Image (cartoon, rainbow, N blue to C red; front, side, top):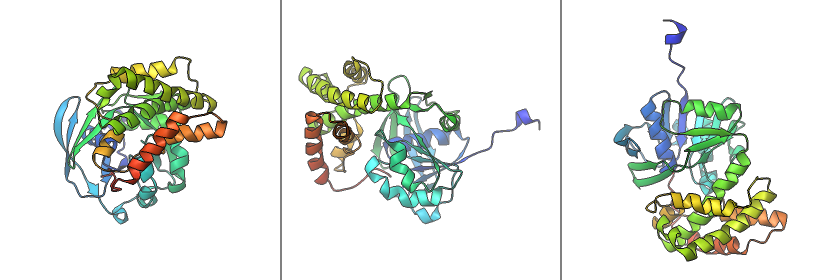
Length: 311
């Protein structure tokens, strides 16, 4: 067999968390069948019913429920909610070695700082997730593309390796040399849509209301000021651009915080509006509306049963 005929080596890939984001990532990688995939979750599962852009299909999965059964992987995709990062530490301890790369597919703006203490020296790769994921049932997940791309990584060596990992899948991945700006732009979408849909218990159709759009613009103006202070290159029309992007999404889509509230789970508020409030405190920027949302959603989250969606 000539070198050109040889298949590229298969990587060992572990997905920690089989919720709306991790379930979709696990399915597209498993369907491409270029790597050895294992999922790490709370409950045993033999397959996922996957609803993607090309239709519905059953995807067989190897799922571990005990970190003691895990072995070091070439790649770990951390797909838990940000507030579940510490609870994923036993998995990371078993999965990470010196050559492991940990792709942090979470919300927020400080992926590496949040995960590095648990990664055992492994390389941490921040990933922005744009596709809309929905865990329809314990064994069913839906992935809906939105916007111009599905995932964004830094334009560096490990970012490009992450793109190669997903070759053969339908996900659209780009590398950006200005990752901090895109991270804040993603945060803008989250700090407006997530709290509003969660508090109103309505999907993104609620964002079509003029009074809700005015509220979102006020939320966004505070966040934009904080993002600029943090080094993001956000334009003068950034708030309006964020609203326009939200309006381009289907009104029937939900948000992760909306789904978590419906399920009585804790809310990912600290990494979203909490990050805006924290940045405002660092730079002396008032954030009264984001602070009010943070207080309201903390109260909602603390009343939840504490269940997660990591699997």
